[in-house]
Length: 126
Length: 108
Image 1 (cartoon, rainbow over the protein chains, first blue to last red):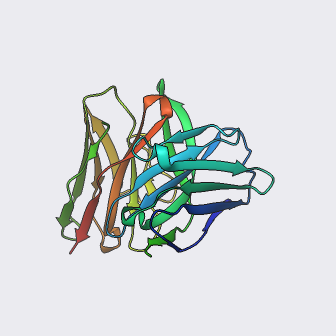
Image 2: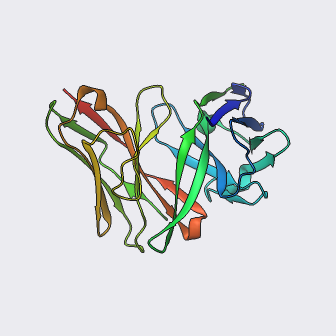
């Protein structure tokens, strides 16, 4: 079955760039109709969508983070990645990768994150 | 801005009904999804497209939507239903995904 696994440094220094990778196993990341996304959750806080990407490379970003976020996809490795620049303490969070599925329902475009990785904790400290 | 507002907490006794609301701006209708998150775990979808239940989710979970408010109902709440619940919707032709502020459900 499809599984997602986040990986990357657990500690990033302020002002540096956070880099995470999500490895997808059990299915091809290039399967039509499936997008791939990142969501984060600060300690004790709520969920925040960061960005999503299609295997073509088209990305969708949260406007509140847009200027600092870069997503990429590597279909040969069946993985996708997140880079968040100029991090601060406010970026400390558990970062989840997830499959992002879009559908048209009753004429409305809608989406859901139907499969999630276990999450990886990223701290920001010098 | 697109915001989904939920009550911070809901508390019920075992066997009672818990209702969690998700209020959005007066924008065109959007479908609402509900996620359950238990401590230290990734979120799990419990309701999709306003009122549909994924396979494996107990029948005590139901969803509804009227106007600008979506509601998740847990009928006959169990202790194992404790956790945080988030509503979710998609906006702007799919370019924007928004989670609600989250509700902590306590069953005791």
